[in-house]
Amino acid sequence: MSPLDIDPTPQSSARERVRLDLGPQSYDVLIGRGLLEDPASWEGLPNSATALVVSNTTVAPLYAARLEAVLRARHRQVLRLELPDGESHKDWASLNLVFDALLAGQADRKTVLYALGGGVVGDMTGFAAACYMRGVAFVQVPTTLLAQVDSSVGGKTGINHPLGKNMVGAFHQPLRVVADLDTLASLPPREFSAGLAEIIKYGPIADMVFFDWLEANIDALLAHDDRALRHAIRRSCEIKAQVVQLDERESGLRAILNFGHTFGHAIEAGLGYGEWLHGEAVGCGMVMAGELSVRLGLVEAGFVERLRRLVQRARLPTIGPALGTRRYMELMQVDKKAEAGEVRFVVIDGPGRARMAPAPQALVAEVLTACTAP
Ligand SMILES: NC(=O)c1ccc[n+]([C@@H]2O[C@H](COP(=O)([O-])OP(=O)(O)OC[C@H]3O[C@@H](n4cnc5c(N)ncnc54)[C@H](O)[C@@H]3O)[C@@H](O)[C@H]2O)c1
Ligand SMILES: O=C(O)C(=O)C[C@@H](O)[C@H](O)[C@H](O)COP(=O)(O)O
Ligand SMILES: [Zn+2]
Image 1 (spheres, rainbow, N blue to C red):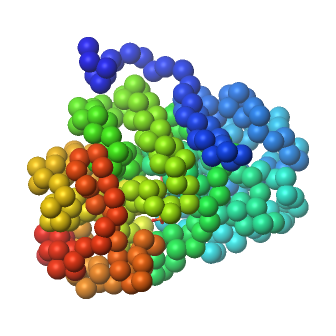
Image 2 (image 1 turned 90 degrees about the horizontal axis):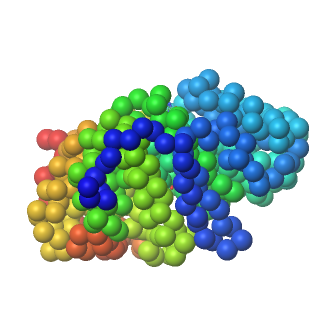
């Protein structure tokens, strides 16, 4: 059997560990089953007086009690906050609810926040932790596939602005990431597919062996095959860790993790946050950015066909909404990678390699015409 094939063995209880080497801010990403209730997952974290579990109205009823039970052995006071669910609530109002809960609970500088949920909860909790008393510690407990392979790792935190995605935020690394695969059992299929988009992303930008593996195993992933899931999550975290270690604050290289996001964020903001999931917008955005790379003469059309096919097999859209070319252009101006008014895209510079590049407006317009609904 090739090492890339999946052996249909029963679910394993083994835990895996990916290390993010960031000097004094280094931390582990733990990946496995039963991690929420396992005291070993939390060993070594501070035993401060207060812990605040930040979750939302969907995830808290499913998993907060399990996490709190184990945290009660470590913290005298374990508080819980259930935020409203959804991308449209990744805003100042929700952020303020976190500060309200911290102040009402007399949280001090040693308080630890636990972000229990998907990327929305994780990004907001991290940002609240970065701000409260000018910075307290937090732990990521991701419960979506997308959060386990991407958002919980790397320390980007923040909220949306009506005019642009993640426009207000901070870099603030967690103390640890505890990714319990058991939580994925309750994840709706559409959300699972959204997570696959960020997994697929790592192939074209960094690892074509992984891309080949994804082509061979996308159906196993959709079926929640344990070995496939573990491999995909671990490899995604390894690649993200390598990139973040080299360029934590995105002065250059880290921008490759934004492949598909210039188009994708425009879709999310243009529709009003929440109509398309972040992963859906990124899946479609990667195909658009791939098409742009072809038009810039950087990669063969055949490669983008492979990417499009994989995105489709992951049950993600590849045709963007009909916002109109001018509106797309306006929305993309707000992208954080733009410099002096010039939008820069992450392009594929040959399979498995990415970089940032400006692009002539005419080519971007061509891509939008080819890849959006009439
Ligand atoms: N910080 C980063 O590096 C980074 C990276 C990628 C994405 N993001 C951000 O992450 C967000 C998207 O994250 P997401 O896809 O996790 O969305 P999300 O946080 O909105 O979660 C998706 C949905 O699944 C529900 N849910 C979560 N866990 C569940 C579970 N185990 N069972 C059942 N339902 C569950 C949530 O309540 C929500 O309704 C976006 O805001 C995006 O900008 C950040
Ligand atoms: O970690 C990163 O760096 C990423 O770009 C990961 C992205 O998947 C993620 O969506 C991130 O939040 C986008 O960052 P932004 O700076 O473009 O808002
Ligand atoms: Zn993303």
